[in-house]
Amino acid sequence: MPVKIPSGLPAIQELAKESIFVMTDQRADTQDIRPLRIAILNLMPAKLATETQLLRVLGNTSLQVDITLLHTATYASKNTEKSHLDTFYQTWYDVKDQYFDGLVVTGAPVEQMAFEEVEYWTELCEVMDWSETHAFSTLYICWGAQAALYHFYGVPKRKLPQKLFGVYPHNRLRYDHLLLRGFDDVFFVPQSRHTAVDEELVRAQPDIDILAVSDKAGLYLAATRDCSRIFVTGHSEYARETLEWEYKRDIAAGDEVLPPDNYYPEDDPSREPNVTWRAHGNLLFANWLNYCVYQETPFDVEKVAEQKAKKTM
Image (cartoon, rainbow, N blue to C red):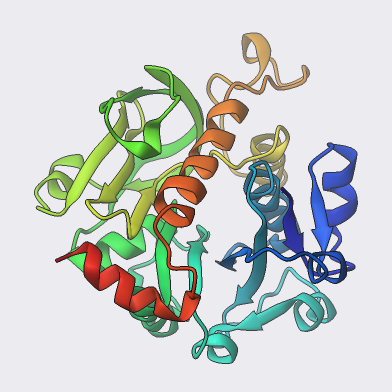
């Protein structure tokens, strides 16, 4: 089944080229199926690219997914046309009385700032608290994962000696967890960040399971016991060219940056990058949608809070 997205969204054409099955809202409304309601709080500056990346992995499952795109109300994006936001996005304040089967909170290029210094931090905290009763499961990505670990558990982030930038092998730690079904023992994930959280501080939280780590990149995947909060520190949703775009952007800005690790064949930036993470990226999001959301969420989406309460009893 396809991902259902608003008619006219630019991502439709790009996904169609890749044979990703998408469906406009007009067509979906004629089907007698209750789709999963998934909201995406897009905190990234390049919103169109992030939309396409996430819709690519969310659309590659057998489930119909109804997407609601959200942006912050307390911070105006400088890199996305206002007309695009006005046409395809809402704010949390527009939907806070609604219920969702799942919520995705993206990363953001603010990781070197203290959380409280981020202009929309108060709003994000409100969204995270709201998700506890209005979204059945929330998937936090990169800085979003760091923000959630700090907000809910007080786990701080720490600055890395240098930017973690490349594609790294990660180790599966559990064989009995639904999120890891079908995963290889070792799998690759793109990483692009200046900060990290200490694995031991997360492991000390009694309701969190550590699921995958990397010798180089550290903690990658963790989840609460009821899978209502999923923490992903890397970018399994990245497209082939995303790290290359970041590399060229930093070079153009005059930054001293090395090519992404394990990305270009023989570390040669003149060659086309290898994609070594796509299969596991698709699997991660498919497992989240199926096992953490679809198999558990109530048919009546307005009973999300009631069903979550039953799972913790």
